[in-house]
Amino acid sequence: MMAGAWITRRAQRTGLARPLLVLCRVVVCATSPLGILIYFAIKASRGQLSEPEGVPSD
Image 1 (cartoon, helix red, strand yellow):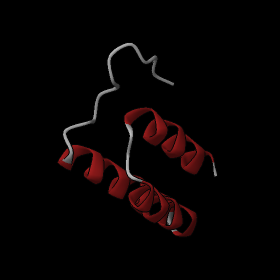
Image 2 (image 1 turned 120 degrees about the horizontal axis):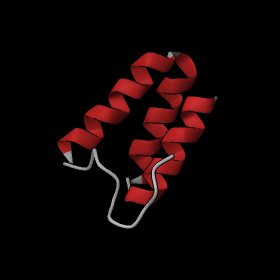
Image 3 (image 1 turned 90 degrees about the vertical axis):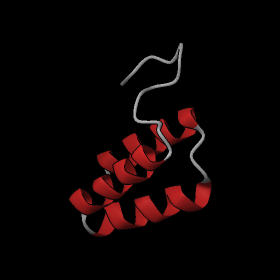
Image 4 (image 1 turned 180 degrees about the vertical axis):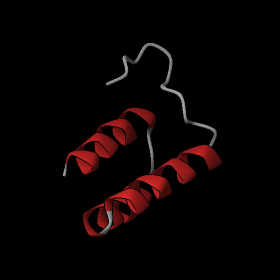
């Protein structure tokens, strides 16, 4: 659950589309490591692995 909350907060800050966020959260609930890897793969494909300017990290 902590991984899902963390992903949600980061996705809201960076503007990740809700359908992709829902996919990541479902997979995180089922298998946490796989869901986190999918989230990072989506972020890497969009070139958004770093935090946006002016946003503190967790």
